[in-house]
Image 1 (cartoon, rainbow, N blue to C red):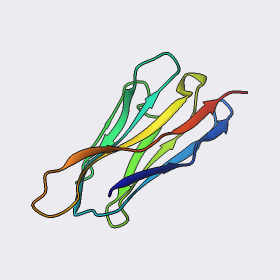
Image 2 (cartoon, rainbow, N blue to C red):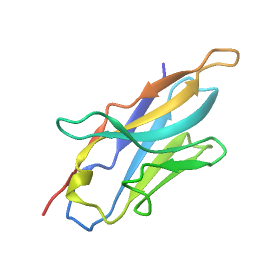
Image 3 (cartoon, rainbow, N blue to C red):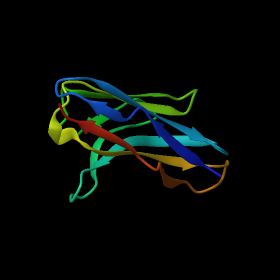
Length: 121
């Protein structure tokens, strides 16, 4: 059984920084693209950033220049460094990864349960 577990959320002041981490546990043969999504109250879930297994990254326009996604393939982890945080960054942040549990298995997307980030003074 594969699980994604996020950590690092909480309360931060506007202009502050925070790092989110997500670790994949369980039977894992390989991991493809890993990503962070967020969902603010009353809004749809949106892509924040993603990173391929080769390290290519993609960011939402709203976070470009402020957020940095990275991964450690040896540890099956993905992180999101968030700088210059704004109140509009307040949301539940979710980790997503495309994981192949065993060799010759088909892969599928897995989601973490989310971690709440609140940006407020």
